[in-house]
Image 1 (cartoon, helix red, strand yellow):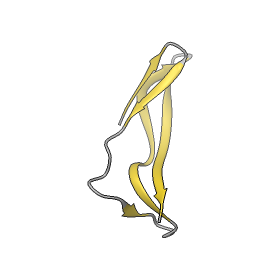
Image 2: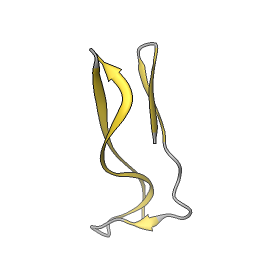
Image 3: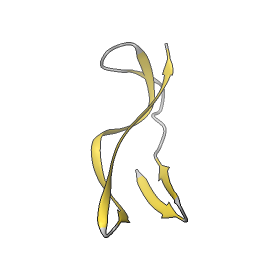
Image 4: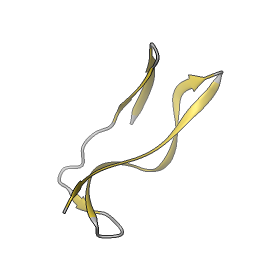
Length: 59
């Protein structure tokens, strides 16, 4: 996962999973995930931005 600050926006790039995968709850299908909270190289006020991301579709 890559995160950058561009102007006044946080831009996140994350690879899609090879195929949608059932979430742990089973309610949705994950298409991309950070796998938990990840500290990035992007900074705000000199501190790294931490991101936890799940992108999903309905089953």
